Length: 199
Image (cartoon, rainbow, N blue to C red; front, side):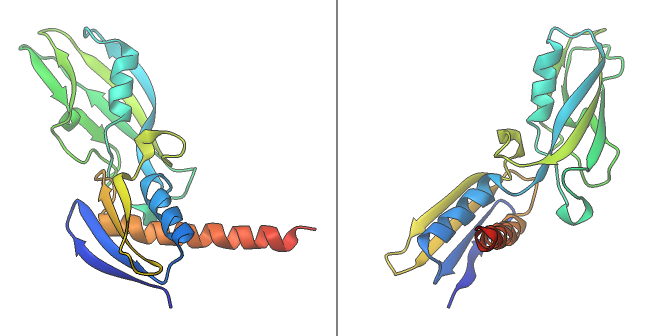
């Protein structure tokens, strides 16, 4: 009989014991937890003004790599989009603008930290950009990876493994595992249906 048991968990990481699970399914779950669970990431950036020393593309890339909090129950793939605005305002001193300056129009989908550096501005320099985040998966680009680490360890017992997942911060660690299990079940059902319909 298959089972899953939480061994340890905190805000960053979770370890679960998978019992009675064949290696190919356990490894599939590991991969899904790493890059198969959808999360939000900035995908499109419109530059309104940029007088900083950084190129538009460099700032856009930094924005794309900022992990964003995600609440899967409120959104559907691939239609959901959330607008965020980066407006440095007029700075009279040299400053580093951070993710605290990236304001989201959604109450949940926002940077996981206010301290992520984006660009350094000299006095009089300004950045105004409109960014659009959408749900995606890490199989498309690493910016959509739901986990930094997803490791499967053999316990030396038959069909028993320990899965350890460390979140990027977009989702709670337990949410990643639950979403991963649901995604794996969905993929297996779709595969069975394909095989059944094969003639």
